[in-house]
Image (cartoon, rainbow, N blue to C red):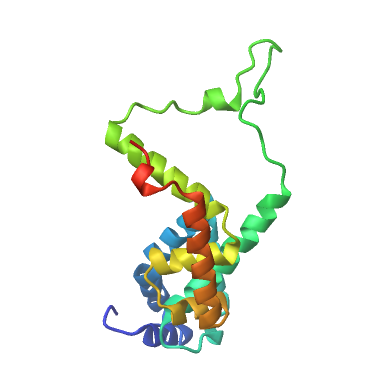
Length: 197
């Protein structure tokens, strides 16, 4: 089945061949999950959104009209991630310093103290981790569509046309999203010349 196109696999799936859907998940699953991890910055949330994405692909398979499944998949994944993010935003955040499991009223551990301690890492790994956190924090400050466009372009190498299809907008809107995202990222991120030592 690996030599079949996305269209062939989708047609086979619609004809009742369940193995075709599995082949589509194998073909595109890693990219979709990677995208969702970058969008949500939370592996558990990304995995939930991944399951929802492919559930929606199953439910709406008959509406797929193109030849390349990737833009349609990323459109569903983007809408799922944004929808889940908006639902989460409505829930109150839990502080890591709030006491939990306090049976005796005196020895009350905080949620923070129950998390595993970070093990010391080499200097280079610490520097790279800090840079990743800085980039993630800057990405989180971008509006949803700008963040999605930038991630799809930079990490997943989708063309502007594919991103437009994924985000349900024009190619010019994608260009604007990416331009504004890069401009905002440049303002938020430290100057590489005077960056982290």
